[in-house]
Length: 176
Image (cartoon, rainbow, N blue to C red):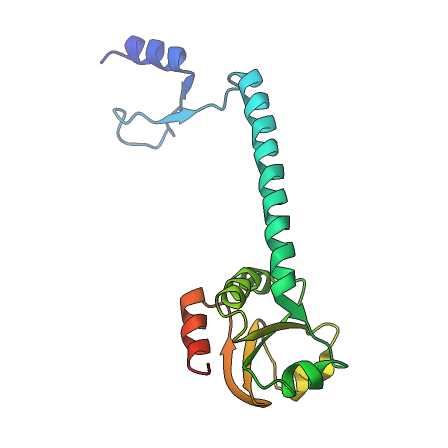
């Protein structure tokens, strides 16, 4: 291919041919680099607005899911710990979490699914470790999310870290 053909093709495609370093031994090596070009600015704007509409719709759906999860997974604090956890005859799953923890927020949906599946057989609660330091220290919580399972007021199982819903369901089924 001649150099004029390469130059014409690269100009038509918006590609700039790079110059070789003078110490390069081979003169037959051709290197190309793509130049960023703004193409169809109207289409980009239209797709961005469509994308933001989809994000807002998804956020609304996520808020609806979160509100239903909040009804299934209740908050527990130090003042209500004895009544809701230790005094419960059915198994209790407690998630130790914090609002700034990404894996904890991921586990909220998993725990909500488990709570929905075992409604009436398992009580699911969550404890904010930022607001309840003493309970987290008492149970030796060093990393979050940590899930404790209690039965008849006794601690039976500990799950540390984000786990899948099947793993958590298998763990819970041992105590039902």
